[in-house]
Image (cartoon, rainbow, N blue to C red):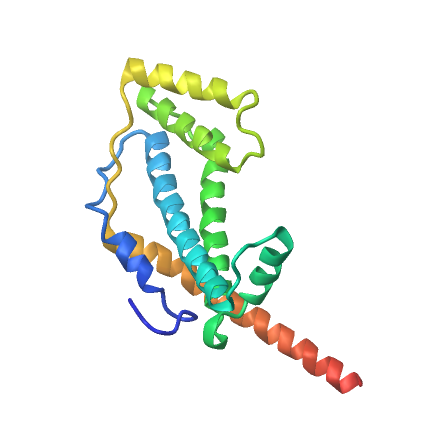
Length: 205
């Protein structure tokens, strides 16, 4: 998995993170619980890719010798890291791969109303997904987020918590690699499109 070319292969950090995981999660009979388990898997992949992106960005900042960052300087750094060290596109690929993974997680969240829970643990699973999405909200301390979290705590106190999710190392690697591969194709297509536009501009002049 490790390779010196970040553009086409996954950075070694993915292997390090996946090694912390265990065996596959047990099968669930409640459709809502299965949805929650799938959401957990996809969400974890997006977090791994976020860490890769942040590591590449930090590496570029360090190599650029930037000490204190303002909003404007950070924006410039991110623009520059579209092409990272040695002219590779590793940062751009990591960024797009994270978007692919997060988009898949959001699609699973959007399907919550279409999935019927058949047990209290299934209801808890649906609420867990809803509350887990509050980190993407501008101000999760406003109504109804604390109130939903309160209902979730009450239900867990009555019916028990959700089962511990264990993940297959191989499946996690495969999941992340799938998003990475899609991102490589997208970045390559965007680069080709940009090169074609530049050739067109040169031809005009």
